[in-house]
Length: 478
Image 1 (cartoon, helix red, strand yellow):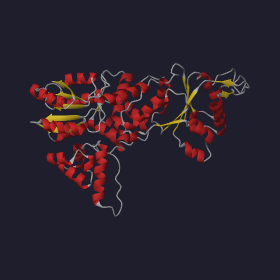
Image 2 (cartoon, one colour):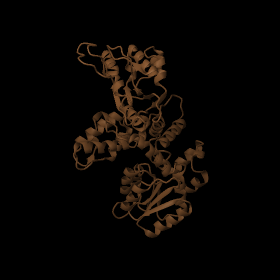
Image 3 (cartoon, rainbow, N blue to C red):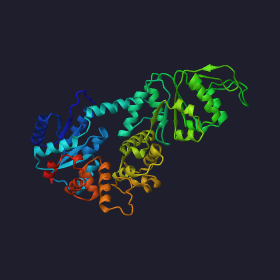
Image 4 (spheres, rainbow, N blue to C red):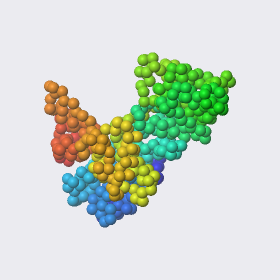
């Protein structure tokens, strides 16, 4: 895909009407945009595979792929691209489907260039240019996209996820100890893999130790090795994980489970780089970078006396917090589609099934207590159980369906307190809905069950007009 350094916004116009297409192209080009045009959805998708697109203007009714089908395909190629739909046949059902496919505005034919310019300005406001956005995402993908020993890849596009990948890219080249924090199932091991494969140690081994899975005596021998006769059954000398990781990276998962005695020994290795095998007296050294991970609150563990403060500070040179899935809702659908592809390939399915709209709604609103790991398990089950080429609600685990919100819901709970006014509740509902749909006022109005003009008036009453696109233009649109 072409990503230029001169960040000029790129608009793709898709319309089978040549005169209308050219008229829009000339008008938007005069405004300083780079404009690409296509006469149908198939050619538009080909352009989207080769260019970073900031905005799509598409007709609804076209031969072959119609506007909505084209936008569905565009979500796979460039998931974040917003769209403006142009149609003389739009209705409520079409509008709902259009919003689900990234449509930010619907313009009715016949259109005026003035209205198009206003809509483009509204959608593009405060958005990073696609070339810059994709350069960042692709740079981050280069961090996570290098296959690790597990063959897994980090997937996501949410701001919280991109911040993690940006930090990974900055942390990887240095040799400092890193501490990865996050709930179970958030992908801490994958972050460790990304750091290793982006570092100068990528040519060396990445050795992993599950600290919570081994008893204290076994874990000590696993970490530091053992001499022949050190314990019953020790029939030969064994190298420990520190020796095996020489020249590379040692990943200590669930570091918070270490016993006090092992914490002391680990601290010595981190400080001095020295250790002895169990049952041995020779002092050994290993050139190892340590990356640790935990789902525990280590500061609290230190306060309670269960974790050494000096070890905590030695590990916490660079901390990376991996957000839970509930804080990166925008990543749920890309992750689900990634897992569908992965499981389909692993199970030898000839055709990869697609996720039904009701399934997508369920995935977005479900309470993912097990985070990404639970989502992957749910998708694996769904792919295996799907009878045809579409994954439906009944293919998802019953518990996931139970924990999902209503289709079209925006998530979250608005708490009512005795004495609170209805006006305050209305303000909270409007703010949360706008946050959930990324500021898309048309989508918010649809979810709230009010007209767009009514929403603008409510925002004006709330004093939110400064956060909009300007009072004069919006008053005109009413």
